[in-house]
Image (cartoon, rainbow, N blue to C red; front, side, top):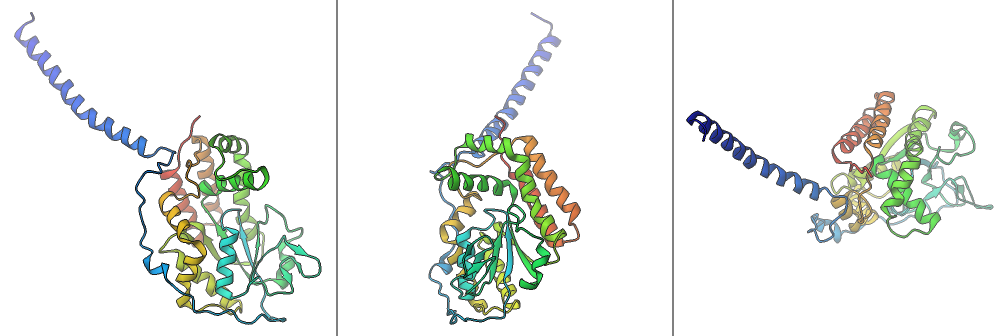
Length: 330
């Protein structure tokens, strides 16, 4: 047996150990819960967080399509986008509802002998979609200034989700994939082509902002378009550009319903819950790849910091990546 002083010292040590254990246990529980709640697998049994979309479900559009004209004075508006930044079906639906033109949206790359080439044909074109410079137009953009509206629209999406969505789309189109590609396939594609994907995503800004003589009409932000509060505002802004370009457009009162019809309740709800199109897993990145994304965004902010709207969008993407990206170290 030790002295009384030694016994007291031992008892004090035991008390400190107990207090530390009592403090540590809740921290471990919280940390464990956080890891589980942030898992990349999406638990389909989780209760859905429903949006209040009641006012949209029974909405109606009063605008009636005008009779097609054989001649018109309008010029097509460029709509450039990194793939999956604006769905083809969404683009088609918005333009058709806003303008009443059944073929108002066209792809620059689509052609039909004698009736359509480079968005010019026998029917009026409101927007000419393209993925330039990923798929080049064959000549300098500025050589087409006389044939297109002076302002362009750029659809933009956070590269954190745009890159895997684009990769997934390619697998579906060219490799027979259905639904979401396997996570292992995503990892292989990501690790092999990450630098190329980032370069392709950033190339749009330089091609249109730096190298072209067109003015920026608007950035059609994917995340805003799928948001119940910001989506109708984005469509209204698009409507205003179409109107300024001389197109007959739906009245402003129709815009919220046009937005809801074009995006669809399922996609609105999906974006609200997961911020991604698929449910099998949330695509992750390595820490080094996260830094590549942040560096690319920082470089763009430095280059185009005088464009306040673009700067705000890029900074919001930076914050999202810092706070929400899933680190996937295999």
